[in-house]
Image 1: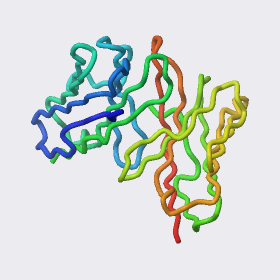
Image 2: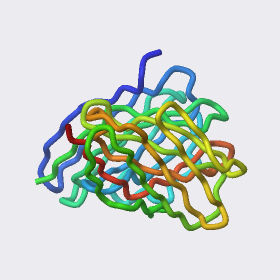
Image 3: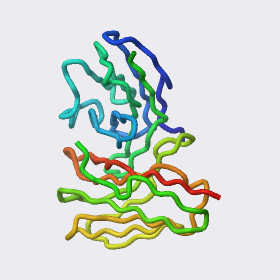
Image 4: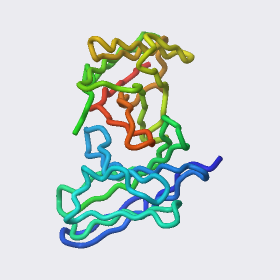
Length: 113
Length: 113
C-alpha cells in the first residue's frame, strides 16, 4: 500500500509570512495526526482528526496554527504568521480504525528566518 | 508535553554488541510503542506492548514493560550499522475512540563498524 504522502518536503520562509503543508494519509485510515518535531526532541502532537472531526487539538497554538481535513481524507496544516520558533519538522501520520500503530510520512522541514 | 523520557540520551556501541534503551513515563497507559527514526526512512513503528504484557519479542528486538515502575526497556541484540538511528518510546492511550500517542525525548544510537 502507498504510504503517507506529504508536501512540500522543505520550506524556507521569513517570519510573519504564512505557510501551508499538505498530507494525504494511507487509504482507509480514519485517523490523521499532525506532529511538530523540534530538532533534538520527540514529536509533539498538534492535532488529531478522526474522519473529518477534531478529537484533540489541545496543543495546537490556535492563534497562529489551523488545520482542516476535508472529506475525511487529505489534510492541510497552516501557520499564519510564522515565528522563528516554528522552525521544525512537521510530521503527518495516520492509523487504521481501531488501530494503535501510526504510519508516518516523510515530514516537511520548515525553516523560519 | 513529553510523557516519556528515554535513557540514555545517546549511546555509542560497536557492531555486534547489544544496545539497551530505557523509557520512563508518568501516567497510566493502554500500550507502549517503540519507534525508530533515521534520515533515510523517517519515523517507523518497531513494536507495541500492551499494558497487560510484560515482555515481547520481534526479531532482534526485545521489549519489557513494568507498569508498577512505569518503565520500559528496548533491547537490540547483535546490533548492525543499519540500526544507527534515534529511538523513541511512545505511550498509547485514546482520544475518543482513536489511538493517541505521546512521544518521549529519544535515544540516539550510533553503531560503529
